[in-house]
Length: 427
Image (cartoon, rainbow, N blue to C red; front, top):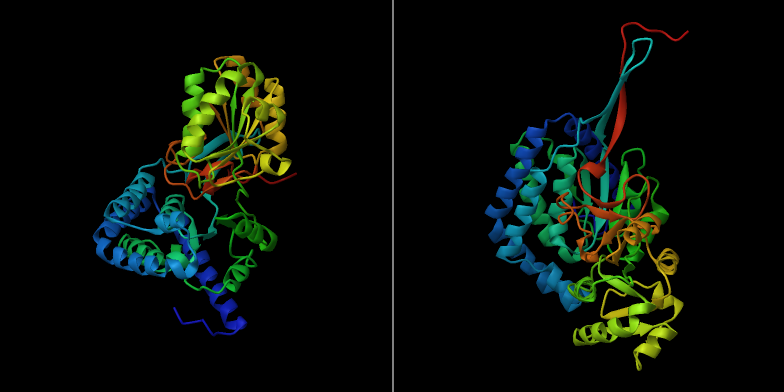
């Protein structure tokens, strides 16, 4: 790839368009590849990643050395860092995707019309995906694997913080693609730091079928505002845990602590706790001690401040906030319906959980909370492609069209109608 650091805007746009055109050509060829070809390619990619471990580690060391210049936090640097085990995990994740059922070519439904026309509704790839993401080297492999498995070409535009790691991982994957007889350009990495490159790709709705941003809210909002093609995304993960009056309190404590504290900087971590008033006096003090031992700051409504003297008072902004850190908003509610109303008002339609022993209450919560993933008596941390059995995900969607929740290979497909006749004409 030419050095475009000082290139004109015209040259930049031309490069981006040529990249998209190559992806479109590759997508057409990949769409007619067999399940066996694509699965074999992914197994070969996993082997290549393992074999290239020394070079990937060397590339990652460059990114780690540059991390202070980009102002990365300790947590962000840890997410960027690779070691031997993490590279093995990346390769294993690619193999898991290879083992998933192939969605491409699935017969969704079939019928025969009175005039003899045979109608088949068949699952097909979307085409070309433009994937914009931040500094997570493992996401590079995940996205490439999910795209290949679903028969889609993908253009990867990762964060500059992981540029060396991502480039080396993509080189390994492209070697496997070529060796497997698939079009190498079905996976392309845009290693241009210029932010204008993102804007250029977002204008090519004649070549790119879907944009997927994965990262901070500002990145996602920028993509949504500029994209000329559909965007699959979620803006934030303001996830709730509601503890019902019939909840097993030991279970409720375990679930809440895991949902909030297991990893605080991820989109499926709990940010808000709702507690039925009948159990608040017993439940809140015990869980508050656990939260505080993990360094979590609690802010609550008036009733919470009464039950837990000394905690901060929550604002409406707190109840709507994705903290991504050691802070939790808490509200005491009078009923299941008040909890549902609170979540539908302040939530982000990402992940919401209920802890209850009553099946009817659980069903009401699941039916009425407007969210991508509802969990009953389980941690919000299970909203994850691997945990839900779809392998590596390319993202989590809070949209309702075309996919919702964790998006794996199946979610990167659409369908077409194939109609077969024997000479029928319209009268």
